Image (cartoon, rainbow, N blue to C red; front, side):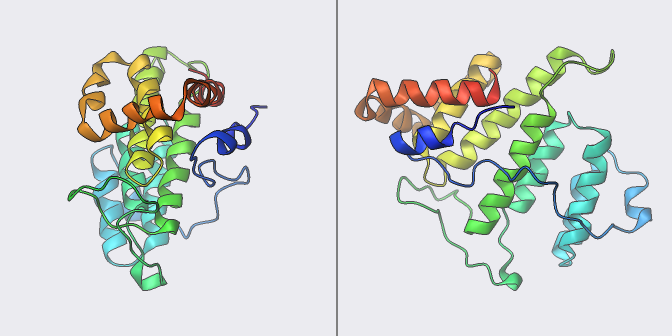
Length: 221
């Protein structure tokens, strides 16, 4: 069993308390209509899900994604689209939108979120990263595919945390993604990421090293 790094990290840096999902199974979802689920592809799953979402059928939207991802657990693009959908604020459910969850750098491109919506998106990305862990099961499930998918998902999680108040945590995840897949290096050139990484110096080498070690243990990279 993997040891959770968050107790140590919270003592040394800002880390999202809800960053790791509960170990229990995801809540039951109402099934989407069979017609919508019968022919979902990597490109159509987000479209079908968003149609349900825009109609206020949140359970059906989740089911559309879940059905596709159960069959294609390494589909990083669809996992990220699922997380982006979950990050949308459910105003009708009483969620209060805000620009970010914690003080820090902001951008005109930041989307409005709620505490609940960021938690939902974070939970999806943690599930996705864990789904890409382990050994290949067949010829189609190549190790390179797992590594590439996992790196893209680490990048997505890093950007989520970086833009919602956890700059050090998020930028460290981005560094891990780039180390795994160097083609993702351009993300480290983004000004917000450069500022966050510069703050590592202020935080102190000990705190940064502890965070990096804990995240490496958590994500096994």
